Length: 210
Image (cartoon, rainbow, N blue to C red):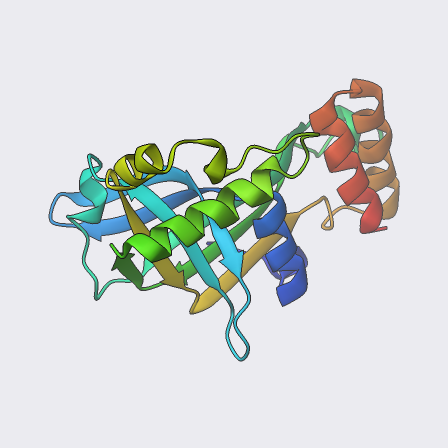
């Protein structure tokens, strides 16, 4: 990923937090058919002395798990808040007119070699963890044990587990840091006036850079 120095984020806890808050990833691998991408939730597991381990699963009907090069690192992309930035928000527009539109966004790229897991116990543990995380906001969280055991066993036969041991992490926080303070305040005010959930999320991130 191209990362100008002003937008580079290297703090591992910050990168991990983005992965956990935005776990729906684009998993990209290279195989005989070329590049393949799947969009799947991944669970980040802390591992002492490493950048972490990502766990997920693919449908057996998905050819990606059968056709990837194990010697070539896979890439998992996690996207955070993003928003269009109009040059009309910059004070510089009035003084020189030398401004252009851009797009602010946050992204993390995790690279590592992919490993397949077909062990039933691993798969069930993974599914319990995955559903436990995403059911936690609900008043009555659904649990795997809410479904018949034989049904869950049958469904689990239709998936393949994957592990990606993170070997390299890249973070890009493109939040108008390359603009002067007056222009950045204009961005904050403009995003505030838009008033959408996406603009509010981006506004908060730009404010954090001030």
